[in-house]
Structure formats: structure tokens, C-alpha cells
Length: 493
Image 1 (tube, rainbow, N blue to C red):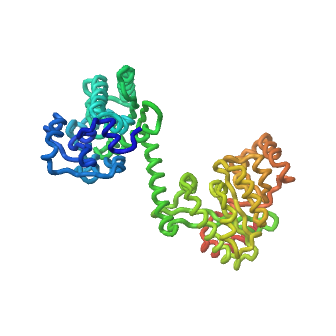
Image 2 (cartoon, one colour; image 1 turned 135 degrees about the vertical axis):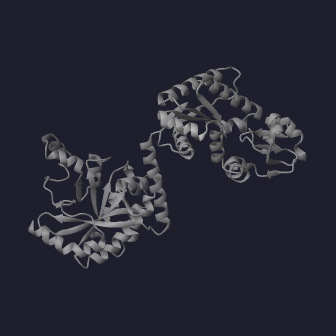
Image 3 (cartoon, rainbow, N blue to C red; image 1 turned 30 degrees about the vertical axis):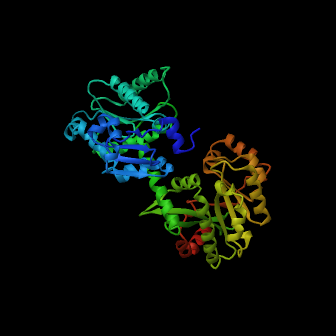
């Protein structure tokens, strides 16, 4: 077991001044046992040809950067070498390497004439482990073996480029996606033969991302960006894996990244961009507004993001917890003001399954609504994810003790089921539109609905109505301005 730098050197490198690796073409990184420190330095052509010459001449080299802390190893390449020592980023170096192999004119001429070709970027998943757990010379042997496997698989017009950190790039200006997939299969078959060698000391897998070159890849920056995206997607799979770039998938994920970045910004800036809209719920018998449902909205620049886009991101990241507290607090502040317009007005607030699964979910509600008549507050739960049964039961009991209404929202969708319906004993149930749209057309669906909730409610007669057909969600100021006119319209229809 290796516990320290000294153990590493003693057991793996025989107490010598050793070069760990040559991940970067222009730099060496090694350990000096006398100084008990790590060092990175630039090397010249002489050193590239023979590392031992470099090591023998080590003392005469003036430009050395030392790192005493062993823990810095894990972050050295990303935080030190890549950003501070190397002039220009690795990204820029790779771009220059590609230009070195295929000129701009050749590439764009190919696009114009054929609108064809592919680029395939491959990476060894375990390259860090190969460097840090084996003698560096063996790492170089593995790398050169992979290179041979790649080159032996290439066709005449396919160009090979060796990038940094064990990344390999192949460009074919005539092939297509199927050719890229076949080439990767050929390379992995060759590598598998290498791994079957009994002398093999370490095993690894290959990830590959590919793009079909077309007019949408109008620059080298674009090519590399999309290749890196594809490679990252491939690394999420198991074993030797291949991912072909999908523009629609890329756009969707970039959109998610943009929205999530904005969400973090909004939360850190006092929830700027988040807004509450209010949608009336009408009593069918009296045709009057009795409740408002608070609906969360998110504005990004000049655009309102669809709830289905950002709510799921809030739930996945658990950012729904701070946002949910803000929603309840803001809704209660608005409710106090709107009570002056419509005495006895109720307010429904949505809670995510993520919030319900928290131990302190009921206490959070209690802390925020201390001065409010709890009988006028309704909590709507949409089961877009799996609820913890114990937490859910305790949550329902807590609401019942506080005389707060529980509403099951969009029943018939997501994870909703009869067991939860019985355990919750909700005061209200909202039937999901995807379910009710079939009831009008089908006796079968009508029977399913009736049999599902027959033990909970005695009839299917609706008591309240809500929807854009009756009244669209609106901000607080619009509701204050229009509530009288809306009430008159409900009475006259």
C-alpha cells in the first residue's frame, strides 16, 4: 500500500530522480527525492529524444517550478500546467495541431465540394492511473501501442493527429458516420488483441466521440467544441464506447446548461428573475373566485422559460428547496394584500416531491405562515418523482394537524397511485388533463377513474374549475386590476 510520496518513489521508482510522464509535448513533470518535491519544467528537442539525458542534466536547468504538497498531484495538470505554465491553452494547442495537418483551405474546400467527412476523437479512460501507478516508461509503451493500433486501422485518406493527455484525433474528409463507427470498431478490436497479451500489466478502455463534418461546423473552434462534447458523452458509458454527435441533443443540453447557470445566478441575486403568477380557481356553484394557485415563473433575459424546462432542473439539483421557501414566503406576502380585495380568499402553493421528502418540510411551512389563517392555505403536490413513503405519510399528518388543505395535483400522471391517494386523505384532487381528455371519449377510462377514487370521494361531480379556458395565470398587479371584471364574466356565463 502506498501512503506517501516517499513510499511511491521507494516502491515504484527505486529511489531515483524520475520523470513521471510526458503528457504534454513541451513539459516534463518529475519527482526529486533529495528535495522531496515535484517539479515541472520545459524540455527541448534533446530531452524529447532521450529523457535520461534530461535527468542527468537536471541540475543545470534553471527554469524549474517545485511543488512540495503531494496532494497537488491530482489537480496539477488542470490547475497549474494547463493554465499557468503552458503559453496558450491546451485547446489552442490542439487547434494549432489540427491546422498543422489539414489547412483551412483544404478543409473548407472539402465541405463545399462534398459536404462530407468525419472527425473522430478518442481518449484512454484510465490514462491518469497508467501514469501514476506504473513506471512512466510503461505508460509510454502503452501509448505507443495504442498509436500503432490506430495507425494500422487507418485508410489512405484518413489523417491521424496525436493531441495532449492521451487524446487522439482522426479526420476523414470523405467518409461518413458509418465509416467513423466502423473505424472505431476496428481500432478497439486491435486494442483488445493488445490487451489479451499475457504480458499486459494494466487494462483500460477507450472512449470516442465523432462528428460528421458539414457546413454547420464552420470553424475549428466549432469542430473542437462539438468533438469534446461528443467525447464527454461517450465517457459516460461503460467499456469501449462511441458517441456520434447529435445537434438536437447538443442544443438541448446547452439550453439546460444555460438555464441552470441562470438559475444559480438568480438564487444568488435574491431570486431575481423568479416571479409568481396567480391563476384563479372558480367555485362551479357560486361562479366566484375562491382560491388562487401560485405558479412559479422564470425570466431569463427577455424570455420566460417554460416551467417544464426549469422545474425539473430545480428538482434534479435540489435547488427547489431554497426556491420553494421563496415561493411560499412570496405567496403569503401577496395573499395578505389580496385578502383586502377578496376576503376569505384561499391560496394554493405547489410543493415538489423533493421538498416533501425532507424531514423538516412541515416545520418549514409552519415557520413561514405563523401569522396566517392556516385553513386558507392549500399545499399542492405533483408526484413528478418517487416519494419516500414514511416522509410522505408524516407530511400528510403534519398538514392535517395544522388544518392545512392537501391537494393532489395532476392525479393520474407521474408516480401517483391508489396507495398514496388513500394514505394522503386529500381534501381536493386535481385530475390530470392527460387522463380526463380520454374520459370524454371512452367509457373504459371513465370506469378506471371511477374505480380508482370510489373509496375516497362519493361522486365524480366536479366542485371547482381551473384552466386557461376560464382564466390565465397573471402577475399580482394584473389580478388586482382585472379581478372584478373576471368575476362578472364568470357570473354572466
